[in-house]
Image (cartoon, rainbow, N blue to C red; front, side, top):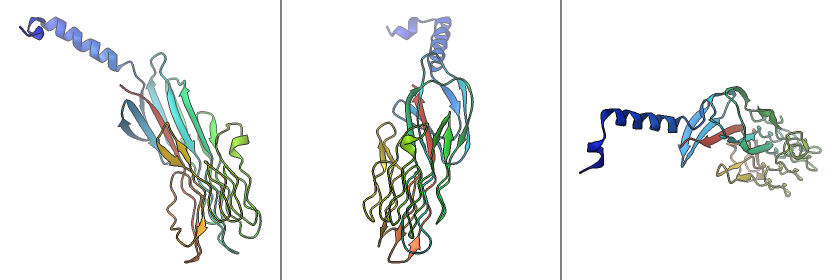
Length: 239
């Protein structure tokens, strides 16, 4: 005889209550664009907003990656690419119920450094702009120039990732620039994505930088590009 046929209505109601209690054992939050993958729920902010936490059961934590806007390429006097935005990544962070302000830094326009991103007390620094007539500007990662700009993110109060620019190429959050070639992006194992690569100076760059990438420059078309906007991604177990 099937087991469920021997269970009374009261027992079934009790079983339902148990299932609801299990669901209540996870963080409940809103804000950003929400997606799921595996056992994790992700909140992605591509613009400023609020991460609102309704409840946090004991022992539950969040992971997040915070990326600043990339620096824009040089707009006059030659070609020099922008540096990627700084990156701050945290795992197993405690959080309480409440509202948390999110600032997502926009990418720098041509000839302008990127803007900072802020979340939960951490700051990712905007990428430095390119400077074809002098040293690249300092930033989360340094902009390209006659000499490369300095990376400020690793020595900031929040720490994180950023590398120096070079002669024309912008530094990336995953590595320094080399000549015209931009530095590598930071590859996150927690979030399975690349963030804040440095801009390059070459004949094929087409702009459209994403995830805090530095602005590139196309020597064939004579076009300089803006840096990519930053991003915040928060994740936590939801099942």
